Image 1: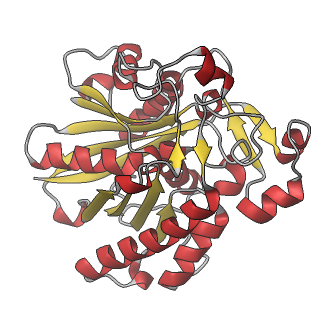
Image 2 (image 1 turned 90 degrees about the vertical axis):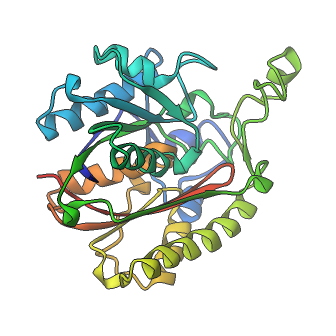
Length: 330
């Protein structure tokens, strides 16, 4: 038995935060943000919208496109670093509740921006082992809740959103996910970190005063490691599977910033037509960025059944991953 990506869906919050809006909040400019990141806008969830709300909407979108009912799902895996609740219940359990699904496994994965690929690998493993047939995987983030809007180095980057996919069992090897690689190296743990409000630095007046419950980043250091690691990872998975870069229909990387995307794409010799880039529109949505990007080309009518996608991501931890995924939807 093999695993295939059967459908894709997404949910984008309605509130737009532009670079010009950020100019009024911190010492920055549209020109500086665009030049450094390629980002022009990002979308922000309402105050009463939780991460699971975003995820549920994306899930319903993916289920409808797959022609499935929520009760057809026998596992939910949610990738997020902005869960509804600090430690429990999981966001996946909240999504299951809102979809009115009970008595199936539902759990979260915390792999930052690599989360969707980690979730995809998990779904593939469960299906190939015979333990699941239809797995709902979700990347959902309400990063606006953990972004410091007084820190101009990070608040310009992140947005909210969710993407979801149905991964199903198939006997057709041609439509199956070809390969996935996931890895991590914890020695870089403090390059991308939310230092406070965990067991290492429990929530306190001091932690709150120092704004340690928000995302902190060493931008230049992260950029250097990301480009090198992502390039090597993608080269390795292509070589391992005997696939040339020109055979890839769509390169769908995590949408961190355009400089990282271009650096990796150029190293692979990919054409602009192969590269899916949504960072200017949505910013960095962490685990949601890859499924949101796939959804973008699907809704534009560009993604067709049988198209081969190369997915690639890098995130806090550091974590990273790549995947060769034919689209098996309609």
